[in-house]
Image (tube, rainbow, N blue to C red):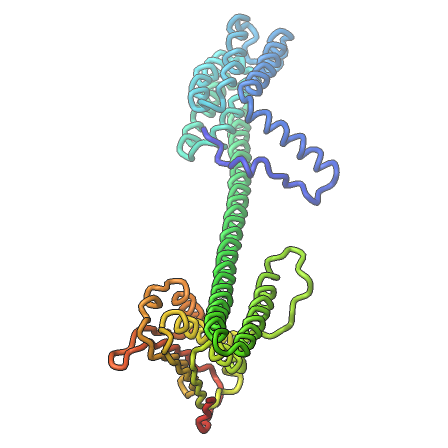
Length: 431
């Protein structure tokens, strides 16, 4: 029979917090169990040899005569019964039911002849192993195998009251079965606790991996937005500066200054973002993330790169409606949309940024009138990043070409409102 207790449960040290003596006993028992699992035959042979030796000492010393009903029993028969009760114990764990069946005729002869060897109690060891590892039905079948020879002996040699011979056997059988059930229940309970702990460790590791994956995605999204936008601005400024250097050298110098400023801004944002990846991170930088108030500087930077942008803000945000996270989402979506316009809309394109607060929430629309907008439709990283950011706040994002004429491209994001009063405001246009 296979032991239902897993290896992890059997090797677990459950003596934490116990007295030193208890811990020493627990460690000794664990070493014995570990040796038994590695070499079960050695333990079985040792235990069997011990009981065979005890049975032979009982035979040779004549101790069996103290309780025997028939003192004239032949000695070879007594020796055979001693070996019949003790030798089969070698297979008590691998084939307990077969061992008990083999002992049954030996027990019957023992009771019928009146020898009444104390070695008959070795049957209880087999019953214990069967109850510990087997199912309920085989255990019930062992009751007549144990009690029938005892009843026969009580009827054949009625020197004492028959109940004084039968009831001790019944009580012994009951106590052995209950003890085996208690040990088995404890093992199964311990195994369940260990399995539960293992499952919790697996769930913890899975949660850690999911959190790490989500953090990697967030960092990749931030880096894509920061690097992509700033490199597009730098590219536009460099192209414009190269063109202006031929006719207006002073404008080339302005372009270089703008490139330097944009580069420093990009480096600052990257350092702040990558700082979280260090193990020896210093105290966190308290510089706020960009939000709605920073859209002016974003649009100014894009304008300096050569893309005409017109921004319009409408309505009044609800009190505490736009959190830092929502404002960062709006900023990054506008940034990505304008970056795509600079990359793909063509040199003559113009863009419009419309930010509107209303009762249903915040709506941001970025539109351009370019004609080279084929790439954003398949730009999985940028478009996916905008949609992921929008989905964090239960918003929706639509991106696609506008009908011709006039054509162009539009990105429209809507973030639902959060609880709080809101009110209209006169339209405020930033030229």
